[in-house]
Length: 161
Image (cartoon, rainbow, N blue to C red):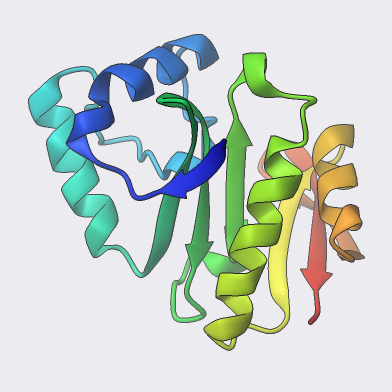
């Protein structure tokens, strides 16, 4: 059964396996890894988890039978990153894609957004990410603009509830 769980040091091994599958770089949007975060050691991992719990917003890992499938974040309206990254950020590890995991997780987190009074919910995805476009549009996201963010084009969506 798939579930949303709060990040914890107990899942270091499962998280490391998922992180390794992505390869190097900062592309796991739902995990909230920053350029200065050191997550390859247990101590660094624990420090990163503590920081994520202090950020303005909420972070969950998407877990099935002890395996970390991805992560999803809900940023508060007060978070300055909302206008660059949206209220929602998510990423699914490559081996778990195409199973509806992101669609399910987004639905769960949209309920949290609604109860938190976030309306509309802003979400961004890379222009050519057809799976993410389908996930967002499945939940009624409306395309507001296509923008240039550094060297990539991104689609900005609003989900109203």
